[in-house]
Length: 108
Length: 108
DNA sequence: TCAATATACAACCAATCGGTTGTATGTCGT
DNA sequence: ACGACATACAACCGATTGGTTGTATATTGA
Image (cartoon, rainbow over all chains, first blue to last red; front, side):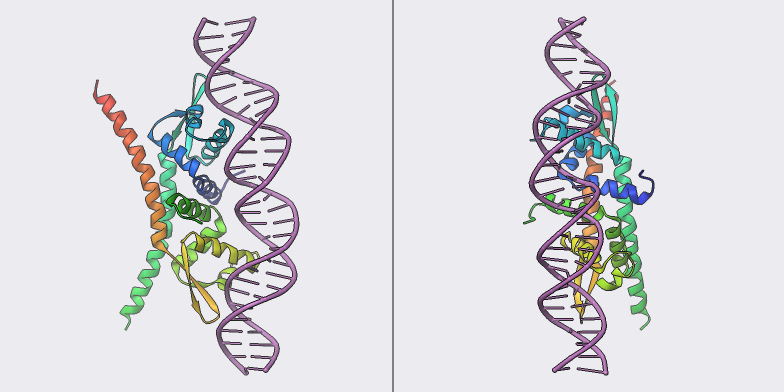
């Protein structure tokens, strides 16, 4: 159902808006971890952590690969960079405003 | 009630997770706009837009200043940059992983 | 002074969120 | 073959979200 880049932006920012998910992302950017290894770090049920991992995966911020009975999660740095570039676009818009102010000042 | 940097991160990413709020942020980064001028752009009630503006303001992404009976909203590019730097921290963690992999390969 | 304008905010609603427990499905080791 | 482990997912719950309408409070211009 998700199709547009706005949908992807919604999903990515939403995934990043929870501190447990940001912590999971940090860990799996540093290296592969199974879902249960991740779950061991938090004071909540395995199922809750598994859902957080699923949210990150749906947003494209992590990928999983099977290894025996485990699913090894790994952070996708390219997805992180795509979020960075959305913010860069915002900064670019702001820069245009400053340029316009400068131009106005120069007119005098 | 918000105190920690994790609370601020929660608020900022949450504020950015809605496309209407991202659009508002783009407009007010480009230049000041009153709340009702912003509301004119969207197919929803004034109150809904006013709440979106309040969410962005609580997250620190925009500031408001009174001008007569209007409140002029303006995007805060420094706040946007602080989000960028959170993502940069994630990229940095990932770089450490790559360095470790390189070191392992070099051992052979 | 007074009507119109601009904003804020409360109360409400359906939908989603972050958590829970319970169950089903694979996969491993013996 | 079977018990233990790893994962997925459904059902449920209270809290929050994104929207609505209605009301209150300033501020302006005539």
